[in-house]
Length: 128
Image (tube, rainbow, N blue to C red; front, side, top):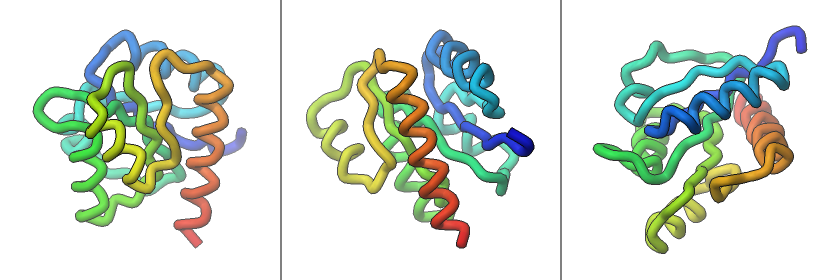
């Protein structure tokens, strides 16, 4: 990849962030990790080609709440929701949010890479 896409990883679990970073960087992506919604919101805004892996259940602000805020403020990055445990209403809200997809942890690397590829295609469509 000459100009690798950026994957924003937002998850309160340090082990998940580390694992995703290792897997994605090994596939040639750039990765920026955030330990929660507020950390993402405080990070420097970027405009490069990117997609977000977003945990549904996090303290202080859920992934669904973060995505809604992002849409409200014009941050149209495609979101891939992921969760290891979610209540039915959280899962439903994530699935109805126009996200790229919903991945249940633990997920296979192939499913992750397919979701990222689909999310980047969505990014390209939005950028036209």
